[in-house]
Length: 70
Image (cartoon, rainbow, N blue to C red; front, side, top):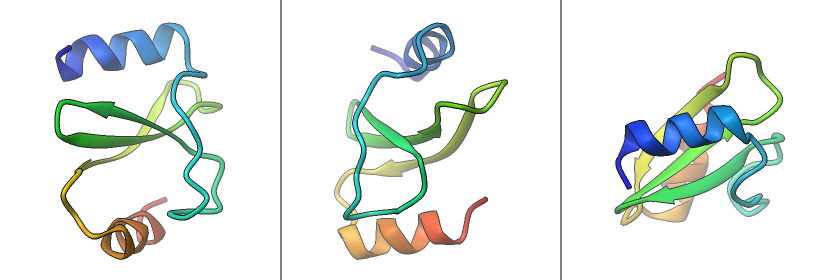
């Protein structure tokens, strides 16, 4: 699935994915697209993609990236 297809799917049905409390306490959900972890805010209208982060990154680095984004 391409990023475009996944983002379109999320916009239509924004409750896809799972929470990652080990990465953030924010109400974000996460889905995987190829080798990337997509973090998004499902309650925002329009859908708000917080980050597209390569899956090989260290979890602590992913958590730091998410802390710096609003």
